Image 1 (cartoon, helix red, strand yellow):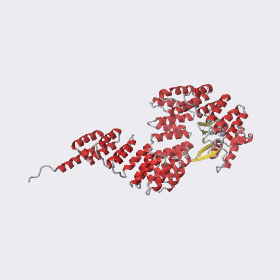
Image 2 (cartoon, protein in one colour):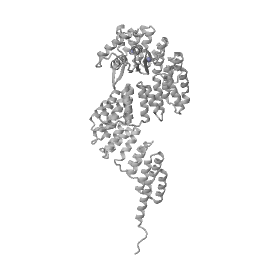
Image 3 (cartoon, helix red, strand yellow):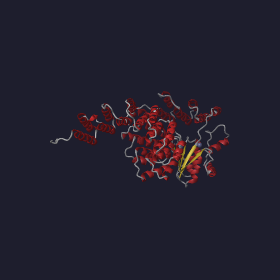
Image 4 (tube, helix red, strand yellow):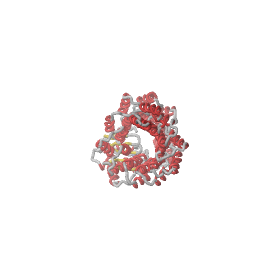
Length: 622
Ligand code: ZN
Ligand code: ZN
């Protein structure tokens, strides 16, 4: 019997199947895939599980909306998809703009009684996380348990992630406690959940118990502290991280730098910058922005500018950070120039940029320029001015003494004016001595913001300045009756990498005695220069002498005294204050800069004051 010249039929089939698979393997784009697909339809391999699965996987891996739609078309043509194919499609949709489709597919999967496996859940749960679909998550959680996948650490971690992302921290913790073989991912998710939810104590507790911490664990803790306003803790953790030999990632660096910015911790900020350079860490756009912001907020606007000029591809955020930096330092012209340059470079300003540049005009008294920019907003930014921008304009007009115009702007603005807008007008009334308008605005303010102690204090001082003592006392009494208290003043000073904190009348610092003694010596010298304490802003129910004692121990005075003790003569002293500087502290600080021949930089709630030779950069206008 003569042997057939042709190989047996099944061998031909498997050879051409291998050929199809290798063709698929070599595909580099969707066009090639479509050609192979056409061939598969001709040969009938499209109904074969293995090539069909490969085809789907390829489309999903390409991961764009066209390839996903193509995959769906292929998938819909398969009459009995297997679990792998279902899972592939769910994975595709979990990463898409339409994660809901993953949940719908899952329902169809259950409806068709397709068997589930452990790989079905992670991407399904990822879709839930993207949708913040808590109810669906709970249902899926039940099905995971019912199907016996509950103990798989990666399914559990996916679940944990959804609970954390949806803010369901107690469910997350219950699950966390039940996972038998927790890995670093489980610990990090839980710590991250607590930190994001503001439960820093719980986060810290887990962090301490954690068997092995990686960079994500440290970063979660540091970022969490920053979000909760615990800036000193954030920096301490950052230092501990170095000691533990863990190299920080960009997120940790950004968090630590923003803590420095808040605390005015210039030395530590510089150290981190040097660390980035030394380790040749690539400075991404977020990191470059935060560096500019940190230097500007820590009072070193020159260094901020030097970092800014080195950024190659300046984003709108970078321009905005620099413009705002110049603005808070009262360097309006430079802010304005930069704004023009930015527009020339073809970068479209956003709302925050406008807030920055309008603030700059306001602080520098550039009234006409500010008005023009405000008018141009709609044209340049395609957006109507927001309430913040109206606030800036009221401040700008008010500072310039154009109180009537400022009031008119408030009356004609398209939204309801908020306390910040009225507050700007009240400050202007106070500065320009228009007490009638001031009293009216002050009354609106305490109605609008009845829990804000500063509003009462401000109105009382307007009454006092107008000589209406009884009214002033009544406002103070109203404040007391309502149980409203004023935020205590707090000043920070960074010395050799340690941030020291002072409250008004604070006696908790270990060197308290020396600080108070020094302040008394400073006071003697200021008196020789003709300094008379200004007590008009103080509590009216205090005796004159007590008022003087209280005013002498304002937090920034204690911080400056501490700075003078601990630095060489002539060193620049930098202080960060949480409230506006009061008139008396401003006068005293000006004199100190002259008598002690040193520059003093004070950042208050809204801006910088550079005290030098008896003057301040704000030109007594703040
Ligand atoms: Zn003060
Ligand atoms: Zn000033």
